[in-house]
Length: 178
Image (cartoon, rainbow, N blue to C red; front, top):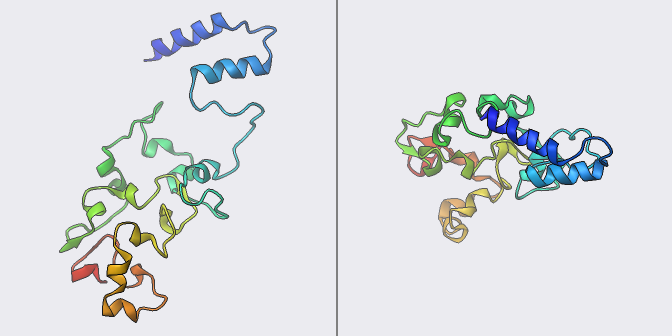
């Protein structure tokens, strides 16, 4: 792998004369060969910039919360060094650090299958708990709002959020009640 990268770098160096090459030309060449080349003139990313870009439902979030290892730039906590490959299968990765008791009688589907990324963004989010969308109506991306709202218990719930009464991961009670 390192040999291939070294050969690629030497071939790029041979194609682009180092002396007399303008910054614009160097940038265009790098951008042609590599994904993710920062824009010309880029110095240092503002904290949380990548998380803001990746948060699909709140690109202009005023307050971005970052996942601890991501914020500390400890990429190797989840990714193999030198690449984007994960250190564990994606279905097991979150449970390596986050303790969830999935031995309860009821387990939410995404939690049971290791689908944490269905609800949580792995790097950062403008939402609490790194959720991928607003907590107020988050559950209604999968659960039918009209059907849930028609239940007598929910008619009197008022301004409560779903997680005030329901555990989003697992529960020993029906309907995942706390």
